[in-house]
Length: 244
Image 1: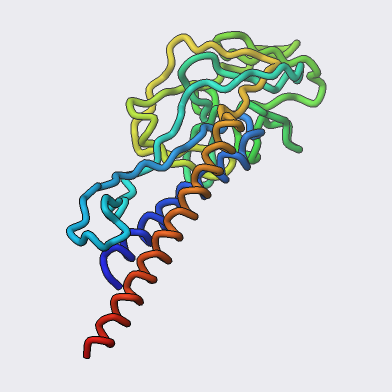
Image 2: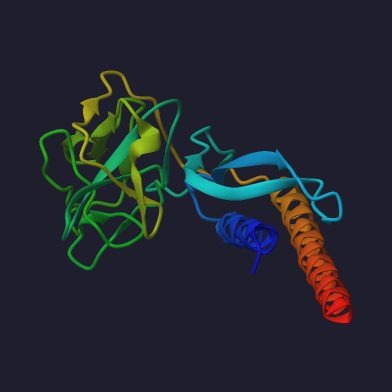
């Protein structure tokens, strides 16, 4: 296969990966705290030296250079659930997992069977002292103040740990709106935590659907290029045979 065929196939492969990212964004548009992603790649343009080629100016081997994550704040939804919380501005909640501490913007918390406050995946939510929170069976009222302090009608239990990082783009996405990073967390001195609301996904469904249509159209165009180049090569071979 000549370079033009490899070029078109490389372009199609890049489009498939872009389509996967867009589809994943749409699948998580209702996931609290989810951050939209976009595939980043470089395209190299060159002119064809063959005037008979279908590729007078063509894309040369698109190369993935990583995933860009949109870390902007999602829209809030009031739930009036006393264990639903959202962070205004920068910061992540800290939860304890089997793989160590991980970080999330998903503040959809609940009580497990032991009265422990856990995140959406059942991971214990940690306080500024690194300890989980426990609610006694006889405690019915849970208050979470703007600085993240959790209290009941009987006592103050501690303050939610809210941290941030130097490079949020360098955080690795895990299942369930969790992030992992080797960076050292930095405590947010004055977090702004709001009770009874959830931060939604920041996915723009209209943008993602439009992008999927454009990707599909580009993929079809690349396929036409492959078919056109194959036909050109077939005619060239027939001409060559006729001259033998």
